[in-house]
Image (cartoon, rainbow, N blue to C red):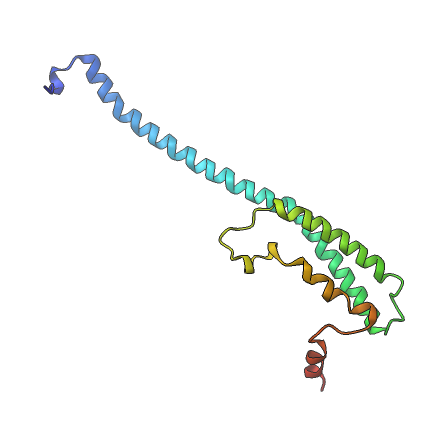
Length: 151
């Protein structure tokens, strides 16, 4: 039936003794491979975010420029910036188009709820917020806030 270790041939004994460290080495190697794969996957996510940063930065920059131009336009009651506000909006629209083009390729964090995920904001709401400045009308809620800050 089962041979005792001392009854086995020397070749079989050496093979069995070598099997234990070989299995340990295989286990350590497997752990290393899994760890390195996780690091590579994380590096890929970081590279994705880094690659999208210039597009997002450009969008934020154009939005800030448009905000400043709109504020100057409204503050001057339409006397200043009337000639540049249209160009600013076109630049912002181009930056937003680049942003929308980039977003389908970005893997947003799956742990984030869709409603809390800034990568999935509803762009359809933007035109309504951008419409009032050229006609010198405040966005909804602005008069309420302005009334509370007056002294």
